[in-house]
Each structure stands twice: as structure tokens, then as C-alpha cells.
Image (cartoon, rainbow, N blue to C red):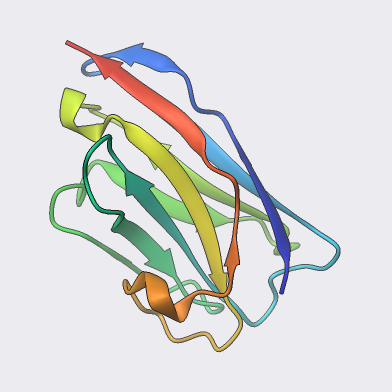
Length: 123
């Protein structure tokens, strides 16, 4: 496992941008698939985006073209650049790591999770 800490969440107006960060401690996430998930109040957790160890990325339809997942070359920080934010993007955002590098949008595949960071988009 790797310890993960998210940051960057805040309240922004609709149409605005935010960049979330997820920093690994204890070890890098070399060899992992890394992903962002989110959970809105009263809703189930859902996947947002995933990136493999070799930087292949995929997104859920609701964020495609607006969000970009990336990581630094040291493989210790994961990012989520969010543009064109909408009120429906309001949620707690979590980063997660899969040591088996399965490039999955299924949360059950992930064995390392951060504590989450709140993103609120006002209309």
C-alpha cells in the first residue's frame, strides 16, 4: 500500500477551474494505476478518471473534455485538473492506488485510498 493525501479542494463558481493534488508518502506509486473517485452527498461513490503507470488515461463520460488526470515524473503526486466546473461536480474527491495496475474504474480494484478533499461548485 501507499499512503495518499489529497489537497486542493475548495468552493468555486460554476465555470471555474481547480487542480486537485494527491501526494504519496512512504513510497512512490511506481507501477500503480492511480485514479480519482468522487462521492456526492446521498450518492454512491463514482469513478472520475484513471491513469496507468505508463500514462494511459480514461475518463467517465460526464467529465471527458473538462478534466485531465496526470502525475509528476517522480510518481509521487497525482493531479486532477478540472475546468468548466458544474454544480453537479460538487463532491468529496478521493485518490486511489491499485498496485496491480489494472486501469480500472471499479473502486473495488483499489487498495490505497486518501481521506478526500471537498469540492463545491456554486451556481
